Length: 318
Image 1 (cartoon, rainbow, N blue to C red):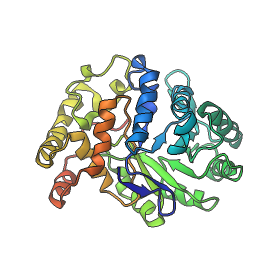
Image 2 (cartoon, rainbow, N blue to C red):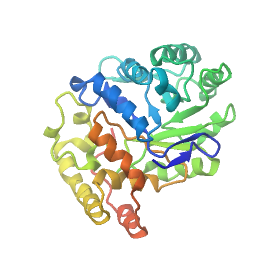
Image 3 (tube, rainbow, N blue to C red):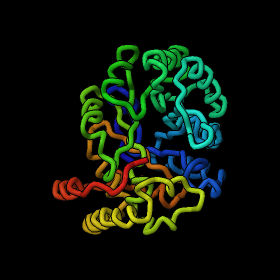
């Protein structure tokens, strides 16, 4: 796989990474298969997919354990390992809640390193800003992990430009992770242009619209019974039926360029900036190979213009 620098001054990484959340959390949790997930992560490294992304809240904790098992021994040095802190398991109707207290960050990095079986992560990210804690305090605690050698660099997730600037005043921001895809383009307005200007890596999660843009779902009934996407507005039956028109137009472009819809969707994301490194998630070897091959898909100016003109989806993100 072709590579790019992680931001303007980071190490070389594969231009497409691997999001590991669905291996143990949110997407079909009853279908969890740790042995296959370990194999997928190791195969990803063989394909040049070096950016491996997880978080302590996925599971919770089980995702880091699976990733740690996959990266045991010689595999660790081949990976650019990223994890996150700042979300914890909620109660009742709240699936997760935010916790940006410095003491939580300090405790969590050690626990993450233990589960991951390593003495450092390449990227430690604040999963969400806690509105009850000044970002400067939370970010300062993440910066302590860099000083202590527990993290090589630190990043943010789902933030505004103002929040990035406030964090930068405390410690350099290496990356920003936010949702970006053909049906979620909010970051294109302000956040992505700012990260490009600053040489900050931008990591799009859900670049395939949680699998929808790959053309894998024609009905909400295609989702497993315990899959959290069933509760999302865009996956409700009426909205999903309307959104299929987006997939059909992606499929038409894919037919012209000799690629799959997923590859076209990823190629469009890659085209949005120099430092854009999408992290599509999968726990399936077939989809892993398909996603990795998107790095070699070339879209013409006409293809990109057609994709840029796709209609907005029906339904909000959450």
